Each structure stands twice: as structure tokens, then as C-alpha cells.
Image (tube, rainbow, N blue to C red; front, side, top):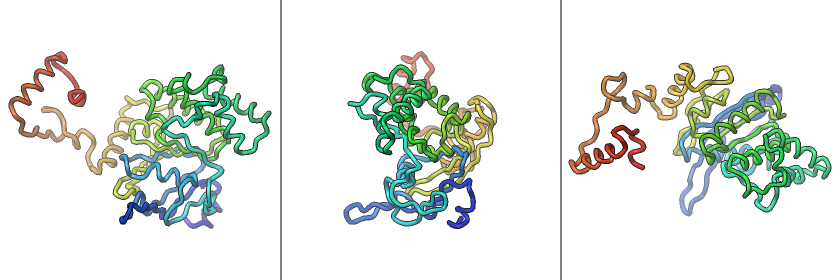
Length: 311
């Protein structure tokens, strides 16, 4: 899409055109991402999905204006982005709160940086704290909060400036399973019921189920250097159920794309004898190693998932 076309399309928020980011490492050059073309429209929840090191977080920083692209152009509302993008905020995977500030002060600091008067800062901060379910914790310090609660404060601070584009850099990866699931649900409720003024969300993740659960479109990236492999639309109705056949089928399709396979996960990895798919034989092993494996299996009660055996 050309800049002129982008200007004529009111739904277009973001367009990346052949964006490349290179770093100089001593005498060599490292390409983080190369020739990225990406667009995000108003009303979309888009996920960047891919393995570690494929440049997902690098792209978020370029979109937010925290890093400059080596080549290519980032257009926001059809205009080339120069410097920090004032219409975008990022929620990082680490909580990134100021430990010497209270919950309310951590939220207000984003408004203070924008020059919002003190009275308005307080009113907006309190409203957002209530919106993310942290009412009653305004005077608490980050050290007094759980991981999930701290990340809620991070969301409140990011939304305080009412960003058009909310960027999320693996925001649930540092949380335990239950906290992450609860926070995902709360974010989706805010987004789907339009309780926040955000026009679009762009989230980085390496969790396939998380992407299928939340996104309208999944952009799959590969590495060495980072590049876009394909895009997969998610047309399942919200709220989505993990056990639905359609959900599981889409998870398999995304997995196949991420793994570079044309087969579903079961066939790519192999299955147990008697089940459909490709069954691969185990490698040759020493008898002592097999005996040790059996001893550990007995100690676990005779049945245990393979991935737990290496713990």
C-alpha cells in the first residue's frame, strides 16, 4: 500500500514497508529483521507469533519509535513515523514499574509526562485502576503486589494515555498459569466490550494457544533473519473455547506453519503406536540408561509425561 492509499483508508493505523533492522557486532553485521511488510487496521487484534530471536520485540520497538529501522518506512495513518510514536504504548513482559512509587503514582507518571494537570491525572488514574480491577490498592507499592497485580498496573499505566495502538510484548509470560489466564480474560473483556479507547492491539507471543484464543489475525515469523512466513486469519467467535474442535484444528494449523511443516502437530512430532500419524522409533541407547529410565518411571508411579522425565 502506498502512503497516499494509506491516507485514504481511515481504517489503516499502521503500515510497515520493507522494514529492516541491522546491528553492528564488532566486524560483522547482524540482521534482526529483514523486509517486513505489515499492516494493522482499526478494530484488529493482531498477534506476532514466532520462535525466540525472530525479531518480534524488535518490531514492536520500531513501531513505538523506540528504535529506528535501518531501512524501510513505518507509516502511521499514512504518514512516515519520525521519533517516538505518541499514539502507541507498550506493556513489557517484565513489570517495569517504579518500585519507589505507589500504584496510583505509577499510573499517574505516564500522564504527568504528557503534561496532564494534577487534578485530571488523579481522576483518570483512579478510574483506570478501578477498570483493571485494582480498586483499593492505590497506595500499595509494587513489592506488596503479586505478579498478576503488578502487570495489571502496567496495563493501567499503558492505557492511561489512551493509545490508539496498544503493543503487548509477551505480557503474560512472566505470570503463573492461573494469573495469566485471569488477566487474559480481563483484557479481552475490556477490548471486546470497548471499555478502553484503544483502536487496535498488537501482541507479541510465542504461545500458539494464546494467539488463537485472543487474536483476529496471526502473523507468523521465522528467524535468521526475522521475516514474515505467513498470516492466518482467526474467524472463531468470541469467547473461544480451547476444547472446541475448530479451536484445536486452528492450533494445529498454526503449529504447522510455525514449525515449517505441511502436516499437523501429531504427524510432525510422531504419535504412539496404533494412533494415526507418523510413528518414529527411539534412538539407540545403552542398557544402563534404559534401566535408569525405567527406575524413574517406577518411582513416578508407572506413568508420566515424557517432558517431565527430564526435570
